[in-house]
Image 1: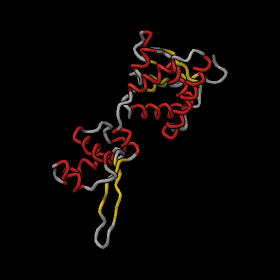
Image 2: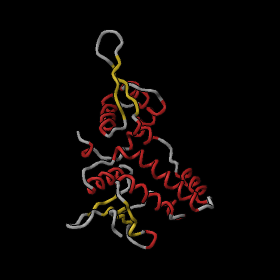
Image 3: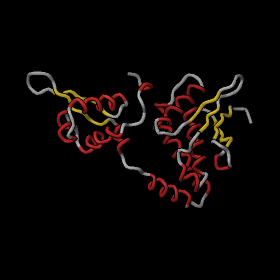
Length: 216
């Protein structure tokens, strides 16, 4: 089954499995079924979904003769999915960044943060053309429930549009987060990106456009 054919949302009944695997090193189908008080068949169905989505992995272990047993563990993606909501921490950290009085020091820190994020996401943004890279970037954010679209008209460069803000709470407090996002996209796309439309200015969406070298 391809990643594209798998729904990105986790079925509510699957959350219990993720939570149990987060607390334990690994668990078998029978162990999960016993704790959750459901059938082994139901557990296998849920594990199949979670493995297809990349949240759970399976390891075979063999003790003596006979068929190997399977242990199920969380993947890195799964651990991130089951982590706590760090929105409060993000806002507190951002307030500390805003408190830096020296504008050059603050700008330098934002640039370093953008580049660090770009290093994390770099392996996920691929493509031979600028449009391919933008589509890949849009898919990355779609996994985080942030819809982006890519528009490309004949004879013009593709445009990346954010239909929702990845950082709504922060953006309401300080537009510097938009600067960080613009630098992040520039790093990932390998081109200079400008933010041509701001949602905070009353526009329906935020729009990012590429400015090739030598253009205004």
